[in-house]
Image (tube, rainbow, N blue to C red; front, side, top):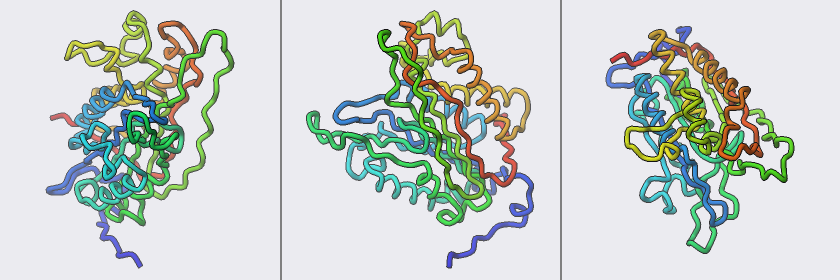
Length: 323
């Protein structure tokens, strides 16, 4: 029998999730799984928006009063080594178990938040699949890590220190097959497969977006500038080519919505944030801003509104960092 977990009467009886950190604790120490490059055979696919995505997420977390995120990334010097968390499904499972047992993410925090930035589709994301050498592939298709497996490490059975605490999973997957159609091959858009039912337990929320970063990275400069704040204009602080530093639309919209809510009021609910993000992304899709590319070619895959699977049992009220 599992050991009982000590839950305070305040936490048990509260109509909202507690968001006031206890002494020597924190509101949230986010985790980011940042997979920037994935190999299909010996050929890599890169997420062009990756650097900007992480930058905007850090700014968003700061606005919410969260601590600096813990990042597991293909940028790590040893990310291609056999013992790195991203090298295999088993390695990543062990890393998630370690995070679930670490007080800084669980018992000392009031909110658990894990973000995945990777290639994949609804229900899973790909691991990097580094080749054995420049001429020898490791696997023709990268290993898949399911979002169900990801969340299971933090449910009530496997992470009792998160009992009656909100566990939020933001998953942004870019489709590795996204491409512009050749003009001689125009056809109806190919719809991504429907989201399978995800069995999750209480106090978990999965918010999964497949609005790939590729939709905005090929826009002409004048088109991007005309769209203004509808899309990310890139980080101009370092003076390089802005096209290489644009965030994907989902992460950028999340950042802008938190910024807007922070300007309106001190407190807001997570549901307001999700509705705002989906409303903005729906406008981006309905007005077909994603079609404004250099050659005016349609895409092989049409963007869709993110899927939210919500098993939270209380209201989650977030407070902006006014300091």
